[in-house]
Structures are given as structure tokens and as C-alpha cells.
Length: 422
Figure 1 (cartoon, rainbow, N blue to C red):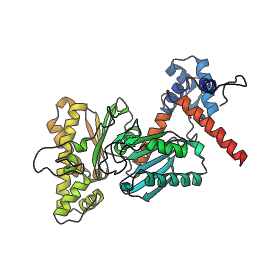
Figure 2 (figure 1 turned 180 degrees about the vertical axis):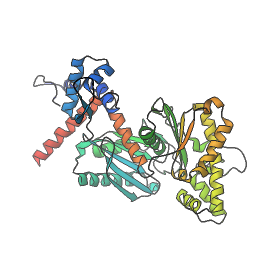
Figure 3 (figure 1 turned 120 degrees about the vertical axis):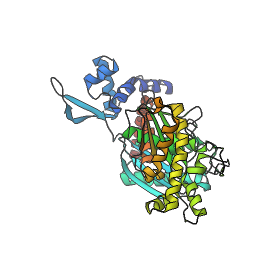
Figure 4 (figure 1 turned 45 degrees about the vertical axis):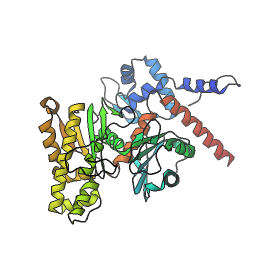
């Protein structure tokens, strides 16, 4: 998209003003298209409340930027068929990373999002941020090269972490398993490598976003509980991810039960939900009973083999999870609760305990139309797609799309200059 013409001599501020003006107001139109609320010129005019000529002008800016395209199929109408307008999912790519305690999974997606390439590797999160992030950057560059995409094609980077995250600051805060990461500026470090926006989020929120957008998009009040190695939850209210004041909302795994015995949690406190019902805690209890287990995956393997102690402990974990979920239902009153993560593969052995306690302890009004279901997202890819969705939604918002267009133009122009010089 060409910037508005001006005098030959122009200040940096003036240049930015001209560039922003060329895309002014386009964000609302793009948001309507990207979210599927309107996908024809007449529908966009009606939904936006703008005049037809204004919609045409703003569509032209988005077409010129390469953000939207006309689909080959037409929409049925009472008269002449209308051409459908859709987001150009090849406009850019998103780099996503799921950083775990011992493994990292990476992906490059388009803007649908759909995974185009991925990689997985063994890491040790205790080595600190620079070695781990350095390896991730190297793998991202290899994946981009494999796809024939350039750095300037990167719309943004999404990082998922197994720890409390200050989303606004792009930093880990008070981690229980991420030694050496506390308050490290992940966002700034990665931006220096790629000159692209970076979104940092805890893994549960990203899983929540993926499950919600893909399978429950019409639900206004939504709760996702991850039951795996650890336990946490993500909250969607009025269709948007709710993080709380500092990004700590949904940390149900460290709510404490005072009843005895009160096992020691990894966070150092006694009696946490996680210490009673998480995958690592069930594996601990199995080991204490002479059944070899170290991970949530081991627990599920024993359950599928009908190992009696595994079945009993998973059912007990379901009731513990149901106790804390009942408290959350009383506070948030969600209409859908989804249980995901590795332990959710236990099916009704886990879910029946959750349902039992929720319906027993919550008011009838809160449970009258409540749905409690197992997650549908693939455990391997759900978090990566959630990271991609976070980046796409952040960069496509009406208040940020003008900056996205300008940055893309500048990056593309700089890349073209480098290729001519080379």
C-alpha cells in the first residue's frame, strides 16, 4: 500500500502521520472480516455504520496492503451475487513456541491459523532464558528457511510458558519451575532477534484461547481447566481472555485445602490443589504404593491398563478438582467448563468426580444450564495454535492494525533493499 504523497522533505513524525492516515479506520473493517461478522461490501457497510464510499476507501487500503482478498465463491443474495471478502491468511506468518520443563515445541502458522512447519527439541528450562531462547531463535530461522519465508513476513511471535506471566510486561513472575527466568525481559530479547511484536503468555491461557475460539466461539462465559503435570485454569468472559489485575487470574492449582494430610506442593506451600490432584502428585502417590510412575502420562498408561491404584487415585483427583471447580462456579458462573490436559484423557474416571462435586456444592441457578465437557484440542498442537491466535488477534485489533500495516510495509521495503544490495 503506497503511503500518502507529500513534500520531498518530510519529518519522521510527518511520515508516520501520512502512513497512518493511509490506513486510517481500516482496523474496524478488517476486524469485521477477520471475525466473520461481515464478508461482503454491503454487509460491511451495514455492520460498520459507515457510508458505502468510506467502506470502499478502507477496503482499498486493506487490499493494497495484502491483508484481504476476494474469495472465488460468491455469497447468495436477492439480486446480483456478492463477492465474498476474506482475510488473506498468507499475508504473514506467526512463530509459536510451547516451552515446557524438558521439551520445547515450535511451529510456524499462517493466519488461519494452520501449522505450516514445526519442530520439537529437548531443553532444560533450568539453564535459564538465554540458552533456551537462543535455541528457539535458531530453530525458528531454520523453519522460516525451510518454508522460503523471510523475517519481514513474521507478523509476530507467541510464547507459551509453564509459569505465572506478566502478559503486559512480557516477563515471568515468581516461577515455581523456571529457575533464572524471573523478571527476564523475554519480549525485548526476542524483538532484538526478529524486529517483530512478541506476546508472552502462560500455557493455560493459550490452551484456553485455542479451545474457546475453535470449539466454543459463541459461549460468552467459559472456563478451561488444564489437568496435567500441573493444574491451572483460563477464563473467558464476554468472549475475551480475562487475566486479572496482574495476569494471575485462574491459578486454581495453588488454592489450598487445609484438611489433613496436607502434602507439600512444588511451590513450597502445603495442601495446594496441585499437590493433591495434579499428574505429578498422582505419580508420587503411585510410587509410594510401589507402582512405578513419574509423569501424568505414566498415570494415564496405568489407568488404561486398569491398574486399581491408578483408577482409585484418578477418581479421587476428580473429586478434589470438583471441589475447587465448585468454588469457581460460585464466583464466575460460567456456562461451559472444559477439562483439558493429559489427565483429561482419563475421561469419566476424572470428569465424574468434577461433576459430582460441582452439582453437589453449587446453587441450582449456577448449574441449571452448565455444561462440563472434556477438551477437544489436540494436546500436541493446542497450545501452539493458541499462541498463534493470541498474536493474530493482538495485531489485527482495530486499535493496532494501522501499526501492523505500517510495520509490514517498512519491513518489506527494507527486505527488498537488502536483496537488491546483495
